[in-house]
Length: 81
Image (cartoon, rainbow, N blue to C red):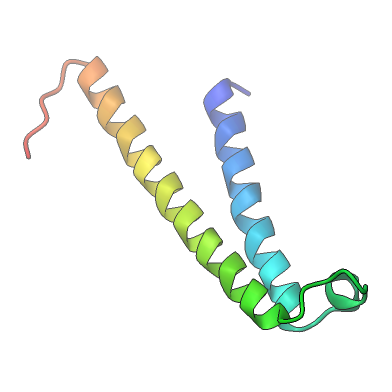
């Protein structure tokens, strides 16, 4: 497994753990909301987790496009905008 495949698998696992955490807060799972030190409004925390997951997924997509463009230029291809 080369470095690019490791980074892709790491990105996908991070993208899946953030919404999972948001889902846990949104449904007030005891593991997330059962302590005295937990946030008062778990639904707001869930919205922040969902937003972070969307932003992270968008950045991953844009970085993937950048890698594709870079590999095309490295092979001698032209880029037309």
